[in-house]
Length: 477
Image: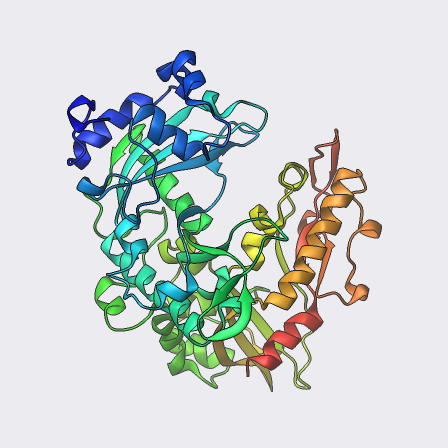
């Protein structure tokens, strides 16, 4: 269609946005009509995004390696939402930006990359995904013209370089979404799809794409919800603070060091110090709380009270900090708990790579290690307890071979949920020695959760086995 016939100025981002806002509260069927949809002939025409491009914005879909609205530098992205039981809306999946051509991408800097040209200004169309509803009847909920904040872009640039460096080492087949913070190299396609060549190794690698992680997209959605409007222009956001959390790094710091190095540097002054010595240095009293080591690790990162897991950067990255206590003989006695299993999510989702467990286990971890020092902590009331000294902190990503075990773990959980066998005897157990197991957290052992098969069942959560944590700790000394 000629540009003079378009209902918007294809060179002007604001004009494109204004035209897109007419979609809010509508579906493609309601705004285009059955006749136009029938004439389009959906069969073989690609995905929902391409339908939006052709039917609503009236431009021909092509494979041009540029943003969709090339003259305006705007990329169009449809983003699926799902409705939770409480009727709230949440991100359904990561936002895929561009496929990774392993042989080509290594030849470009971040600023010259197709990914950067596509992601720096995006028109995000959030729609409500409904499994059994025709896609032309999916309702558009939010329309957002989104410019990635400058601070976020520094972290994304570093993430991009981490991915490129791994490809240059001949390790494209070892890429993981847990390698990075905001930008992921996510799996694409189905099992059995042909793998791709990589330039510095003869080993074929799975198809992957650059994507903004689900955790990052959740913070974008949270920002939109806080705005209280269904059509939002994000130009005014320059600080990078999109989530509800507190920011723990500054733009100036990120211009000099990576996010991870900034965090690790915070722990350097405490190397070898006992719990009591760290408390003294931090100006706080020793605590009898069971999570006292987690609390001082949090305080070190935050430079004061607070929880880094709830900060802007940790929320966007889906990053989790976990403390580990190592006994005098090198053993680790405690297993590590995660969140409760959402039985409905497991029941409804048949794709491991879209599962909540995959997001957790393929994410990035910050482990903070404390080792038994043979001393005692003496409390004000006269009680005492074994003391542990800070040893080290490191970032960790679950290896691909362990993710295969995790997939087996998830498949077992899903089969149990589908078969309505939600009980410990059916799940992976600690004594199975398969890295992971299922059991309740002690404080919620009697709590009940809704069973998608009907009724209610006990809450159980995901766990790392203590021997698996010990393996991680020893391999990262």
